[in-house]
Amino acid sequence: MALTSRGYRITRMPDLAQYSISSFQRARYLLGPEFQAMAEANPRYREEAQQINRNRLLYSGRVDVVIGDPRILSYFNRKVADQVDVRQPVTQYPLFPPTAYSVGFRLREHRDRFDRGLAAIRASGEYARIEQRYANY
Picture: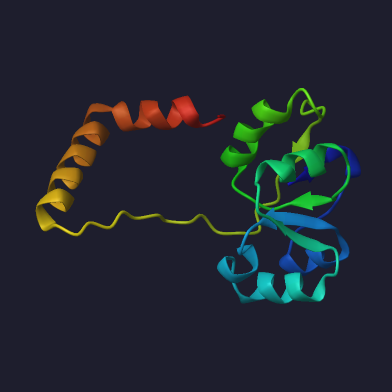
């Protein structure tokens, strides 16, 4: 994600090498070998322990690109709106495939109960309503 006003053209992972980047902790190890190679070769790559700092850095123009879940960045916009202008338009660059998350359970009965509950809220439409409510969080 970058400020739209910058007019960057980022279509592939190697394109990131020319920019200053702020990402979340351990991103270089979690986002694949191509991203790791770029991060380790880019002296202007940094990882933030406090994710809120990415928003401050982006909207103040101190970094070119931030890497992270758009919903998390949107959440922190609410926290920094009195510090930086979060109304500035941003462009998202779809460089990473969606992550399919899963839940782990120690007990089979907990897993089965969860699965039944999830199936029920999906069937009722509640799941879609929850997703919609948080789509632009």
